Length: 204
Image (cartoon, rainbow, N blue to C red; front, side, top):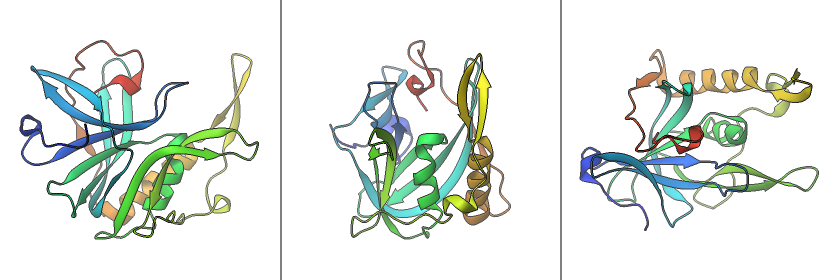
């Protein structure tokens, strides 16, 4: 099933979450729905959401188990009959999409598509493509050399990459560009229908 209106969700707005998935799972678009009084995410059988940008806003989602989780909410209008609110998690795999959004204008037509990109070592990494009406990827607002460096940290003997400073930089730029002096919207989220195994299973 593709995107569809769910009046129980609140008026004519369609709410969609981009989920990057666990290891071995494909990223995709999931519509947030209330079914029989329970909130759930249902994978839809289309891989792209398209429309003109009417609003971009950062969000802070709080959950007792997973703590504070940040996301970017993008509202798309025409040519769809109903506006679509797409929630993109703020994490390493979505950095490219957030950087592309920073090159966009309100009223600009975009396609938002979770998928894969080929890394320098020819491995496939999860990402979100933000393309224009011509299907070409929208250029980043900030080149890698303009972004804070990614730190290498060691946790329990394993080297890991810490890109918190880089993501904080991009979030601050999003707020400056699209929100002005507004503060991030703190969203009270419904409890999931079942206990989530990881944050990607949550209904937000």
